[in-house]
Image 1 (cartoon, helix red, strand yellow):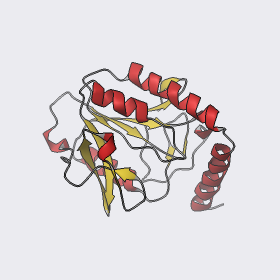
Image 2 (image 1 turned 180 degrees about the vertical axis):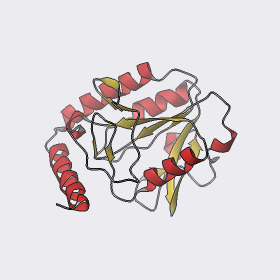
Image 3 (image 1 turned 30 degrees about the vertical axis):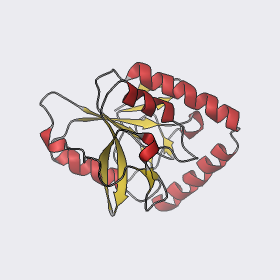
Length: 196
């Protein structure tokens, strides 16, 4: 089987798993996940995250907590390429070109080139599937992989945390050379560092 077929097959299998989760189970898992993120990411950490789609863990309570504690929060905008813009009010998000809620075009763009030495950016990244080695299966448009690769080539230090429901954790994710590895994966059980 060609790797693109393997990826398509795994996406389909994960979609089926998510469909079979009850709303109550998904909601309970999402609440636990938000607690783990709050416990595991210290106050004072600028966060790049995502506003969840229906098929993703609902991390909205964690995003609200980040804003409450006064930490900078950046969410993605897709306009041909991926950029992160600062958000101060989740109620002000608008529907983007890919149908997801994203910051308005007036939000400040994340300035990674001004990163202070010794600091690391924390990114929470959605995906369709993750494995223990940090391999991630995305939706297939490559937006996150391109952005991460470009920033790393420019020397930006970052900690990539994949965010998943338990049913999205698999033994092995098919990978290509451009796929970027996560440093850790967060689920309702906690934030687990990935094996090299």
